[in-house]
Image 1 (cartoon, one colour):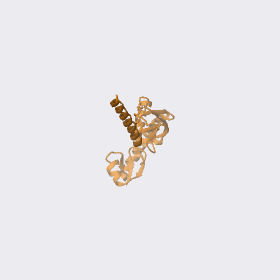
Image 2: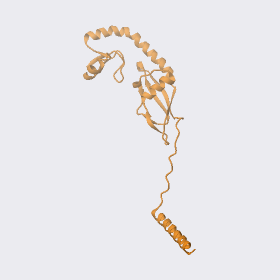
Image 3: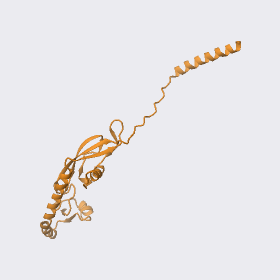
Length: 189
């Protein structure tokens, strides 16, 4: 089914593009959320008129995305996480965590779905993450995952060494001999 996109949608297209999507996706998602309209003759004519009007809007969105890219490119975001002793994280760092950190530390709002992570981050270290912005603009930031400084390792109590049964029997035998000798001495006295 051919539709005209009214909003940029990840993995579908940008504003103003005529794209071919599956009918169920169009009926159940794009059309009810007003992210697209059906590409028929009447809508195409109306959209051509709107397209001329929207070109300025698209250009502004692209310029804003370039500005955001300027703020993000090369920046570092630090996340502190609890770790095990082998530098593995308890849990993982996801796109939502990165979105929140960018908003707090860099004061820039980004779409969580535009953050490209091939898989969640599960170890300490530095990671380069790509962020897709409007108008096909991309920015790259460095995510630094550090150990949480408030984390304190509590040493587990060391287990007592296991005693072999033969050692226990030998110990019992010497104790028994000593007590027998002591009793014999007490009787003689």
